[in-house]
Image (cartoon, rainbow, N blue to C red; front, side):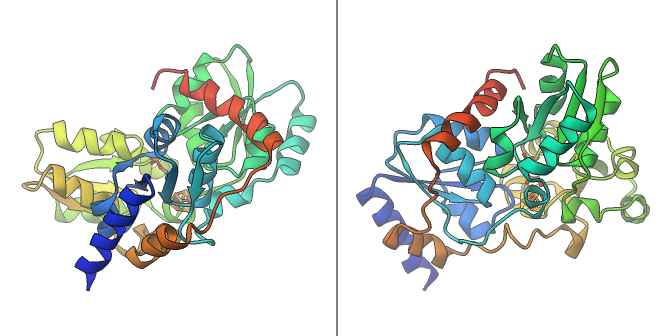
Length: 303
Ligand code: 13P
Ligand code: SF4
């Protein structure tokens, strides 16, 4: 049954000159058939340079929107209409501009995990892979970091010469991780190296041997000599970790580490997306023009 779906997807992809992009948090079977898997930054870059006519984006809405902004002439499809990101939905342009008005004279740095209206009012975007470098690259001394308070706090710890104001947003998955979760795992696996995504609270980041984006964590685990790793991020990442390092062992934070929205996309949805070309991301020219500037500015900054 599964085999049949996969071959249909492969045939349709060829017929329609489509490409399937998938985030590391997607279901194993979706990652397996994707043409490109990556972290948010790599996926944005890939979307901007592909010559496919259709991009099927297996991830959440802000990622597909970013692809559309960077490749406006292409049809960008999100297979599940309500695959959203609760963190992105916490910030609206109105809330962000109100904060800016209260603080006065700040540059707005918005995490790519934002909806298009927030990107439109931002000076520059960032991802977890480049947030520190992006903030350091700015001349402005006052920064409003939107919407993830934990990533913002992590940036604050690493950029001494700026006044950084934080929006009060958080990812439901990473925010649930605690110091005790890591300590309990370390009691059972004392040799394990601890890898933490910077959307996690500072008490978790403080226990990390490595802090970085999903791609950064994979790179660290592949290159490090250790055999065991505690992985404080969404559990879908283990598929790629096991593929690249089958002899190593990875411990996640169990049911806490599942992003329900990232898991909504099934193979059936991918097939439906290719057959019916739904659900297309539609943005106005104004949205694309305004939101493109902060994303392109981010891409020009080194990781
Ligand atoms: P990355 O940018 O590390 O891929 O993370 C995306 C994300 O949604 C984290 O929760
Ligand atoms: Fe959003 Fe968190 Fe899911 Fe990432 S893991 S998509 S930040 S809810």
